[in-house]
Image (tube, rainbow, N blue to C red; front, side, top):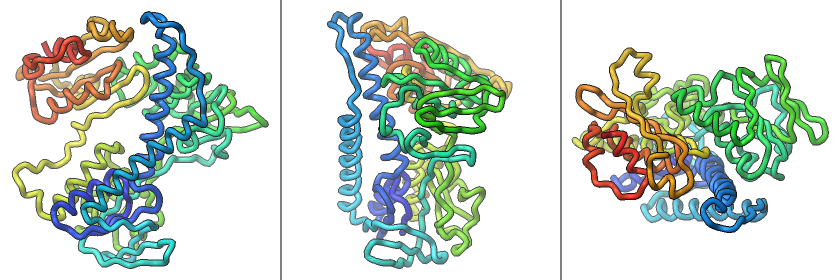
Length: 449
């Protein structure tokens, strides 16, 4: 098996395939662990953690402590990010090497259906493969009207951290990535304006969840330009101007693009192997196979749900299918509708399974129960009663169909509902569980009851 791309999909596939007995070669051009994982996801969450710590310091007086000032030191923060990346990449490399996976530092591409080429610093290497896995990820989308310079006009990858902390950053894009950057920069002390092309932030999420985040943004002084689509960016000295299609103009010291991504496929040699593509993505079946049966695609390149957790599971499923382990009775095909996801704003947002709005749109009968964290003792102890737990269940059987959580540690708490949704558990299964007191998880039991 030859894998091109060492992100969550690639390294998960490699470790699983090696464990099942395959000879595995993994080709990675940058960072083992994946650019999206170690350049995007992990650094952004580390910076958000720093911002959250700074926000917490602003509340300590209410908790019986003297006021503490939290000044941001970008040099220390930058070194912290480097340290986290190095430790994670080191642990991944150690795991792969311990399982006999051959790691090749280079740029991989297809020369034919079974031929893979790697361009390395030592020269070109060629491999014959029974199975090929394409997992090259994606990169930030940059439209023609955005003159990205990495100094004042940034993509997300220029912001870990940026050269200087923005005095006022205009964030373009109100999806998951956009709102996380709004929270991050605001919590680090920057003024923030958010360009929202729709009438709510997080247009694909539960309106009640989006409204809770909007309310918190407004409370924190974030400016929202709703119903405005950015059409141009200009820079003059230290000021950046973002023009919108409705005539409004947003001005700041920096602009940051968070408007999606494009797949890294143009140099893969797909045509040489006869692999079909669609707008750069590689269409796959339920086993992650392309139109060429022994060539698989995973992660962002597959065009499916772009989450690191999903990519890692895709990699595992590919290895199991390629090596025949999928016939085991315990094997399950991926069900993307049951994938849990989280947004690391403050408060955090997480959801899984069927959303309330989608159920109503489909005319499906559901029961929705909601409990605010303000009723949980642990939320009061934490001095953070924001948010709620919402559970969507089948009114006839009590089976948990989905749920949303807004509040502290939502990304951790959603795991309970994810297990319930994946395994067809009922609200009674949650309610009858003996949970720890006092914890935020008690709100889940109350909502289930």
